[in-house]
Amino acid sequence: MAYSETKVVIGGLAHIPIIIGFFYLIRRQYSFGAMLRTGKNALSEKVKASPSKASAPKKAPAASKTAAPAKAAAAKTAAPAKAAASKKPHADVPVNTYKPKAPFTGTVTENYSALKEGAIGKVQHITFDLSGGDPEFKYVEGQSCGILAAGEDAKGKPHRPRLYSIASTRYGDNFAGNTLSLCVRQLQYEKDGETINGVCSTYLCNLSPGDKVKISGPVGKEMLLPEEEDSNIIMLATGTGIAPMRAYLRRMFEPTEIEKHQWNFKGKAWLFMGAPKTANLLYDADFEHYKSKFPDNLRYTKAISREQKNTKGGRMYIQDRVLEHAEEIFNMIENPKTHIYLCGLKGMEPGIDDAMTTAAAAKGLDWSELRPILRKAGRWHAETY
Ligand code: FAD
Ligand code: A2P
Picture 1 (cartoon, rainbow, N blue to C red):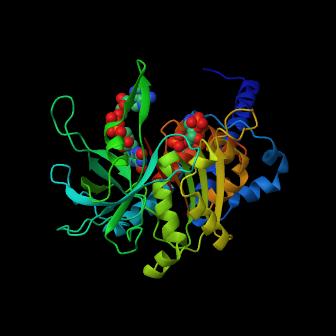
Picture 2: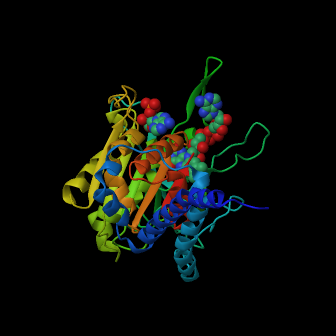
Picture 3: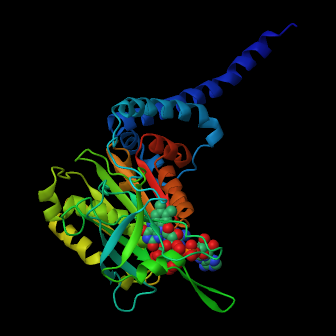
């Protein structure tokens, strides 16, 4: 087939924007991959260098166009993750020491309300004595346990276990290393004009000191803290999702904890906590105390949904707070030592995703690509229910 000279020239010129676009995408993904590995804040330097890009949130590039470079970036960040996997971080963390079929029997030592006067609902802080186990029931911060409520279900079978995040550090609230604490909201809802009480949460909330309880576990490695003392920890919690965060914060800032272990947190921790009312803010006084003692290491931002309004006049949720602090959060995320933990209501995940999408777009990043990269690098930890 014969081509005229003009057609060939026009055809060649038509490829130039495609080639430029291709190189732009590779460069962008490369700088992000490099940033994740090295911690060098290449992106914010770039954003600062071109203020027009930094100011207005710009639409994120379509995922399909950048899928291949994103995969490349993910593969790059996965490589160190693989190398690290060979060292098996958290390899000695105990899992399933006690299975639901052969649970441990713990004894309740304390069960008190975690709420203040005027709060909505019922949330209890419950502690169990774990001593006497053979093998010992050991766990670390960020794990969960199973609880087998006494009694039987409608079919006459034992109740299936329900999972609860452990709210204490491995040393326990008494620092003796032989207790485990939970933070439990009693599930209550209305059906056909009747109040239905959740089986296991009601059982737990009504326990008294001395009661024997079947406990399985511990389970889970999703929410474990990194071993590096200079990690940065961003925590996003709603309601009882605060349980693992309480354990992290005690490990980081509770004086007797610090004396007990050889892990001296030197990074930045930032807790975003969502609660319906001030009286529902769980462990608030402890966190305020830590903040006053360690102002350079701990930030504490509250979203009190039924007392505060977001910019649109709706209920203030933690995703609204995330948006308010988007720039700082993403500056932290650009540091490979930063981990993000999300725990609480399942319903908050889409809201957090939307907020992160907007926040990332303001930095010229695509959250739908970034999140799997962070996850693969073991820096995005989520447990919602
Ligand atoms: P159930 O008797 O099992 O009733 C729950 C069922 O009721 C639901 O499956 C649904 O079918 C129905 N239902 C619920 N709400 C409604 C409604 N509004 N309308 C109609 N039907 C409804 N909980 C905590 O309090 N603290 C924690 O730290 C905690 N950590 C968890 C960690 C993990 C990893 C997981 C998976 C869950 C966690 N949970 C936690 C939730 C906990 O496991 C239980 O699901 C919760 O306590 C309810 O159990 P229940 O036996 O009381 O309710
Ligand atoms: P609200 O119930 O006012 O709508 P608790 O478990 O103590 O009820 O706290 C859960 C907190 O999470 C409440 O402030 C609740 O607000 C808030 N919340 C409810 N739905 C969402 C959501 N989709 N995203 C973020 N926060 C939410």
